[in-house]
Image (cartoon, rainbow, N blue to C red; front, side, top):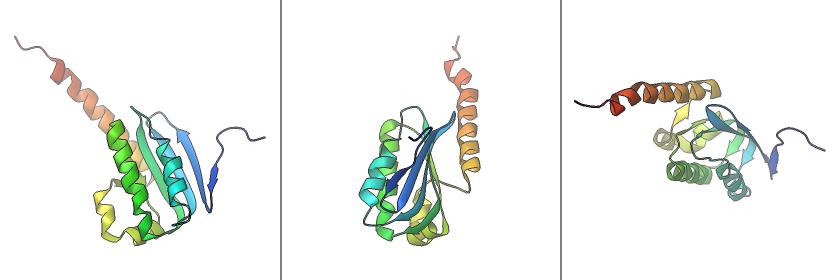
Length: 137
């Protein structure tokens, strides 16, 4: 019997999701390749939730083929459709596979940094809200 928040095994990649106050954090460790990319994408997309930022932690990925960039495009589209911010933390394997493509995706140096960025965005919106709701006389 497994208690808590289990990991999902996707043919070489382990996926673990945690819903935090600021964001849903999906951590993927291991190998992401052509054999498991569809399953990994499906599992990751199911954790994109309305009104909750999404963080993809790929820092434990040891192998990432260039074709697996489709995962990032799928998550970008899902987050856009759900109207939520997202970011990712990469590993050396992911950075090497992406080359210059990573510049088009939101990247943070660490999970902590990404959560800090999400918090700063919330604070900024809260700061601007009174200005938007102020009545003009």
